[in-house]
Length: 358
Image (cartoon, rainbow, N blue to C red; front, side, top):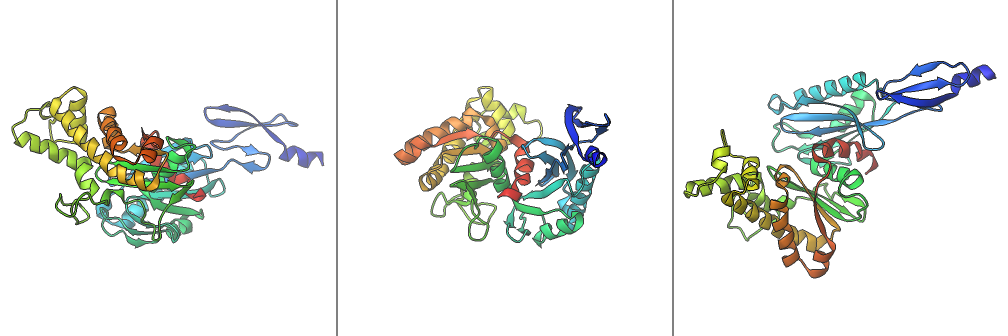
């Protein structure tokens, strides 16, 4: 009896270099377990989050407190086709599990965030507009067969929204809108504490709200006058080029050693350049106008804004807030807070690890 008891009774006593030491109360033996430990007979569980980008794929081992304990990246190489990209992902996940000493018994789930249209219930990538060949790919089935681990997938912005809701700027909120402003504008919606996906998993396409009856800039979707055609990263660059062609001098011309980018225009604005500040004010006012419709419709507690363009800070956020306060209905305007995302470039992998809960 005592012998069996000694085999099973272990006390977790310390952490050293992220490697827990296990101590047998009877034999005095110390056992070293890398990246996981025993609680009685139960091993600590982790999840894997995968964030698919156009250039690189981020993969992370995430604990149950939302902390990243191990991560790596692999090239997307979308030009090589989906089979090649999936092969890279499989290899990267295998390497992560091997290097962090994990196996299918310690990994509760794998979650993916993809930049496109996802069928969450079926676990299928329906369409990735900027990654050729990604049409109706059953990623969940493929990964579950490969690793024997439950796999979930969703749109990348909805995934980031989950991360911000549980561990970031949205903690404690029941109703929020999370948008990313970069190459385009996407959003995730939380209504009464639940992520809203819509009838066909297509909810949240805020970037394609129409800003006029039709006469406006051409959007990447093929239509005209979409929100993101007026207020995304490419819109900032286009506006900057128009100012230069119009003969207006600006510091961003000095900063643009190769080509203009929203970051360069933002840096010029932060250094006090008048033209650059005008550009960001106009972009902020446009984002504020687009958000006004969403805020009037959904009455969120918070609007969380992330993405590369949002890193400009107050030169962007101040005009957004001003327009919302002026144009939204009084109750909605008074009850909403507009804030910067907190998780940065980890929102995707952390949020993906939470898909098993959503």
